Length: 126
Image (cartoon, rainbow, N blue to C red; front, side, top):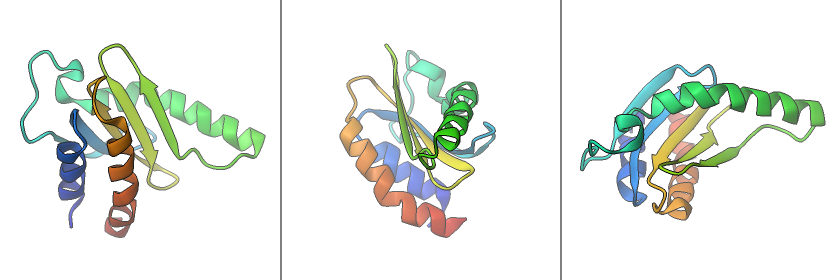
């Protein structure tokens, strides 16, 4: 299974997702896909979740430094809920994260489940 197929299944099945990417903590995307039904013109980020990954990547890096300083372990998951989009960041390994953009009324619980379920497949592709 390819990264794109894994990510496509996540964004299409989660309910309310419109874009998902696999990217490094440095903000560089490895791959990104949009929901099969497409992206509406009024969707936040215009379907480009990598923009959010770049901007929030600095915050994730700071969170990683803070967790190291506290000795609490690696960051696994972060959710940022904004007025027009919910961003879900899930660590794949030390340097890679999946970032999913959902509509605020999207099914966050199912999105979290689908990403966690797909981690084994994503890691196998590395």
